[in-house]
Amino acid sequence: MGKISNQQIISIGSLLLSALITVITKDLPPVLRWITVGLILLLALTYFIYSMLSAIRVRNSISSTAIIAKSKKYIDYLYKLSKANEKKLKKFAAVNDLKVIERINKKVVKTVRGKNINLDNNKRKALQKDLNVKIDAYQKTKKANYDILKYDDQIIKNTKHLSGKKTYEITQKIITSICDLNRILLQIDQHKLRIKLGKFVAKYTDNLYTQLDAYIDYIGWTYILIGNVNKGFKAIMTGIGLIEQQIGDGSQIPEDMRPEDFCHLMFMKARAYRHLGTTYYTYASRHIDPTAYLNKALEIVNNPIFLEKFKNRDCDCENRYQKLRIGIENNLLLAEYYKLTECMKNKCMNDSNCTFDSLAKDIDEKIAEVKQMKKMDKHRLIKLLVLKNQIIMTNKYYTGIEIEGLEDNLKAIKGVLEQNINFDDAMEVFIQQKIQSLYDDVLEIIRS
Image 1: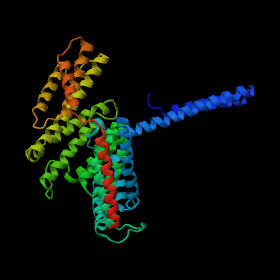
Image 2 (image 1 turned 45 degrees about the vertical axis):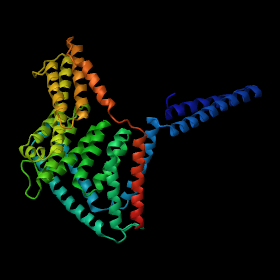
Image 3 (image 1 turned 120 degrees about the vertical axis):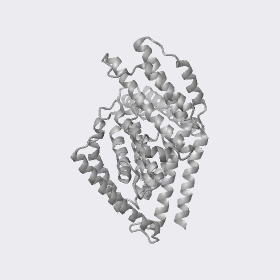
């Protein structure tokens, strides 16, 4: 029997209560009335005992449901600790400066939606200039705030026990744990909690790259996953704004910046635009044209300076570059598939030379490229194989012509999925160990 929802419990309770009231108020012989009441109470007691036994059985089992439930409980301890820690940080000036940046960024966002991504008008220029000034002031204020925190052994105003230095150390421990567990939060369906923890990281980390990860991935990408495209868009664009304040348009490396830092920021900017162009989630939105953002991402990965400084550094960098580029190109092919399907569905004229057959051939080239990678990206491989199957099945539906490869692709996908690690008790224990380790570290800092 499946798990009964709260709504079902309320419905059952209402029916039992209604029946009980009816029996009590109805003019029945006393013996019959009490027998009926007894039966209703017995039914309620039986259901209560069954629910308790089911809960105990789930708690003691190692099923995925039980493991995920326990994992959620451990992650909730992390969130509670972050909220307690935030009380000692949220009055810092840098936090208010960040709110100002986010407000200005919302105005900038309205001028760069979809096909207006490259729009160059006076309003946007003025907003962008103001945004850069505010970001620059925010970075300076934040550095000053954290310089005080790192080295101040005095008790922080309005706190009973912790010095600034200890508060800073605890904050970094919490942020490290959030970053270590951020992917697992998606696996245990904790999207909203991932966003909340991401906001904590974005506000209180003193590391720019970690802050960008928070805006682009923990907050922005998660919002897109749960269907809140507007909030996801704003968070990702805030990350892009922080990057552009550092490197401008990326046409050259700033004089005071190391090439590896420039490449890292360019990489994150391309990944941000790829998120905006992830067509499974954004293509249906009338606000966002995924192709514009994906082409913007491709411009970055094809930037000569980026190619020279990033791709050729070592094997790992080359592999990361290939994964990024293939991910962008996969989404462009997906966008073409959607456009072509929409055209076939509405029987409109296809304004490009793209066909299902040509798309299938392009995907075959990408699949071959992924298989030749030094470290094959199974995630990208599955995405490409699934897209190829979509094309095969859709083409057969609309044209009656079957493109070869469906069964082979299904077998290949099955082979990759069988190699993946399931979310089992080892994952739950890992989460428990991470949270326990964090609490031990915090306790040690407080006692020191």
